[in-house]
Length: 321
Image (spheres, rainbow, N blue to C red):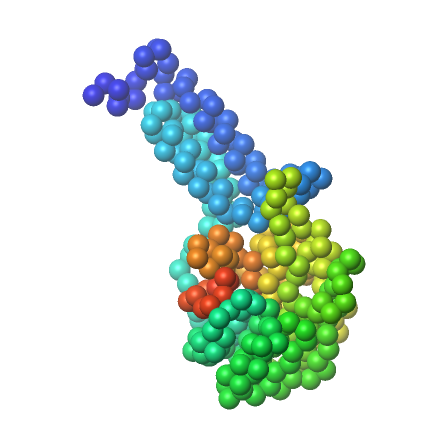
């Protein structure tokens, strides 16, 4: 039983003298959390990769806690208070109880997958949540008529540009394609649209966007095309004349990723809950988003899996600042 006591170990070291490596790792974890923007993107875009999965550094804290207890190190346990406090400051609010209270509009965002074998079932699942707006990406020529037919009675207004679409319970106007195509991508690539929506609270602008995919390879995180597309999207939003904007889409990264800064710097996307949307089998990151300008995301949550590799996300939005 002596080995479980918090006294000196076999080498005569006190609980304060042992575990210094663990304490150093705890400080390093705190630094990565607090100063993730300082991690350079020059080599393999490691900064963006870290920011995409930033909340998961909480697992590192849990692992270090277990090792500190096993090592019976007071020094390591005290040091772990630092990353725990930083993590709680960054993400603790997302763990508060859900409050799906008063909102003016419920918006639903879903990348339905171009490999979805049952679009009719997917459409039916989306209707069950009774949203006001539905944004879909990866609409294929064969699946699009199915979605149009299935959603028509609940959403009498809709617009499609390329592989993205918007369905609405409220009238649409001034629908136009959104040019977010990076240089080097061939003709026919169309993944964005902009529309006005005439809601009972006034006219708002709704954007639907599907940014290019990223790749994780042996030599790093490849997100150049995605970042370029995000820059074009951010410029379009900055030029939007209507005050209130709702942005829905698959951005292929989390809001902490600096590659999305041109968009996230203008928009609000708080809400409660992590709402990890990808991959559907074991969600690790929220790469599907509902963001607003001159409006508030009251809450955001995921819906049950469909035939896609993404989970649908729903957001309650209160219009007005």
